[in-house]
Amino acid sequence: MRCGLVVLNYNDYPTTVRFIDAVRDNAEIDDIVIVDNHSTNESFEVLSGAASRDRGTIKALRADRNGGYSCGNNIGCRYLIDVCGDDVIFVSNPDVVFDAPFVRRFKDAFAGHGEYAALTGL
Image 1 (cartoon, rainbow, N blue to C red):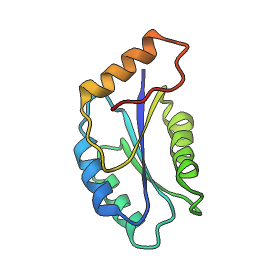
Image 2 (image 1 turned 180 degrees about the horizontal axis):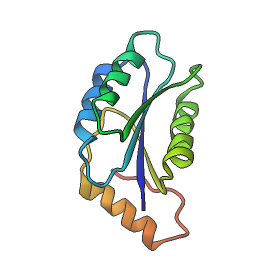
Image 3 (image 1 turned 90 degrees about the horizontal axis):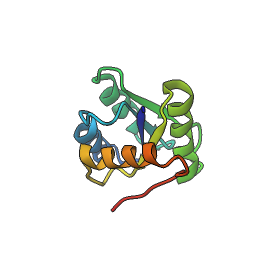
């Protein structure tokens, strides 16, 4: 079971970079996509640089317009499904903290319950 993570950014690359640095070594996550939601500052350039430091599991994408939260997340989800082949996708804000056991519980829940389409955590 492959697991991808989508994080959306808009004009706040410092928070997003800190988040990426915190989750990049999470053994339960195979792929990370940062979607810059058409920021008006240098966010995309900075985030592209942060992604390029990785071993290839982090990709920075730039939306061609800011279509809102769901539109930006859909760009990332579509990439993780179509390009990476991920089965489980996390959508996260960049100002949260979670660890590998948290992700593992989600993966186990999906593996054990084919009827599940979405889960959330606290």
